[in-house]
Figure 1: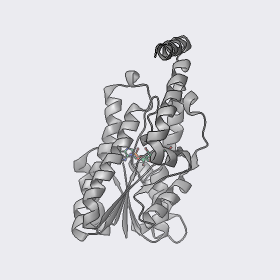
Figure 2: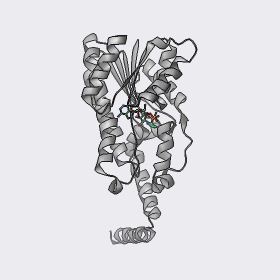
Figure 3: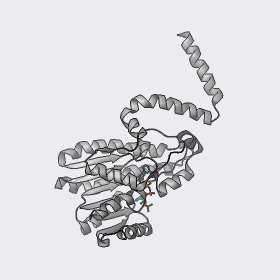
Figure 4: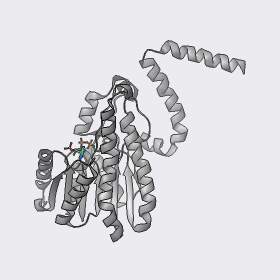
Length: 284
Ligand SMILES: NC(=O)c1ccc[n+]([C@@H]2O[C@H](COP(=O)([O-])OP(=O)(O)OC[C@H]3O[C@@H](n4cnc5c(N)ncnc54)[C@H](OP(=O)(O)O)[C@@H]3O)[C@@H](O)[C@H]2O)c1
């Protein structure tokens, strides 16, 4: 099989590529930085029983649909049509919305949401004509609940939920399986950078959760694909949010909102609001 992994030079994408390479598949890694791509290729090739000639890399920015189509064409010319697409390329730039330049907001949408659509577009027609193919979109737990400082990231990752659902409705009938997964915090270069940028308010609200390893996240994603799952979840609280969101989110959002106000030093306002609520209740 030919497996194409966008964002395959690092983190979750690289860990998934290793698993498929270990099964003897042909692997194409797509990302921007050619040096990181070459390092990833060499890392996979150095694993036991891996044929290095079955791994190729293409430097591409997935936010460009033309570049992505061209990159996929090159990979398919070498390794045949894509059987599995892993759309893992992504970035996160946590920052309060009013402090975030428009370009930073737009870049997250362009790479995480539109970049995924570009990669899917590049493989989908051929999958459809062969009535065969699997697509895994790497979303995030941040798709399931809004987080302080993550307005662009949450928008991009929850946008993928609608995209996967709608595309799945089209693809199912033609033999293409579309899946989406919602990884938790995962120890990768992106996560380390994110931690250094995460706003203090988000830090205080979210607390410190021990991140998963990229290998563990990758193993669950590949297992989900093997089982033909449409959605892959991790841990306990994220699936709860996914399945019972309408029940859980109102009280959770109320609690988060109170905590945020306190963090901002608006305790007085919140006490006034409580008093107003009390007066309102008394008047009823
Ligand atoms: N780590 C977490 O805690 C976590 C949690 C939930 C979801 N996720 C999601 O999982 C995916 C992988 O994240 P990760 O933590 O493994 O990050 P990572 O280690 O930073 O890897 C990101 C990969 O995406 C590539 N990439 C970024 N922008 C690109 C672009 N415009 N075009 C092509 N490739 C691009 C990067 O290479 P170049 O920079 O060289 O292009 C790199 O290969 C992302 O979509 C992320 O949002 C991560």
